[in-house]
Length: 186
Image (cartoon, rainbow, N blue to C red; front, side, top):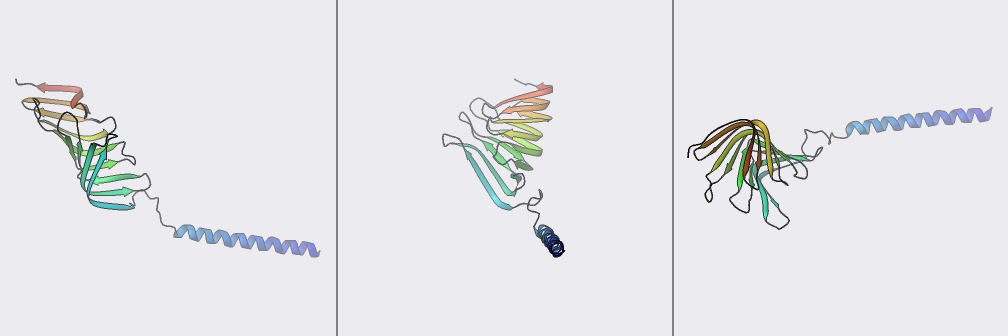
């Protein structure tokens, strides 16, 4: 009989202890800030200048922006009004200007949502190339830029319009994907 009473008291004590521990744990979890919230940045910079170098030590591309905010959940950065320059061995850098940019953690993809202006300055016998489009995705490692949006390209007296684009930033070649119309004046 005494053994049953002791067992019952021990069981009640364990139940009360576990209940108290669970209540404390619940309160602690409520007090933890939502650090993993996707809309909460962990740091921000102003007047940003990032230069990515190639394996040979030469600059591969550069991003300049008045503001950059980093989000820890998916380890991405958001830049305001970025200018992106891709350096080339055989000519001047190609510049991309956008309203904003989202850069993935390792920099393997740069997404430029909204209006995007692309400029390749004149060099050698090539005229200046201006490309006006939107929603461009840039892949820095293969040095490619793509979009499925309408594209307008102007180079000297030549005018091209189409939907979708693939721009090889290393070679400086532009491929329009569909509904291409052009005007060439020699």
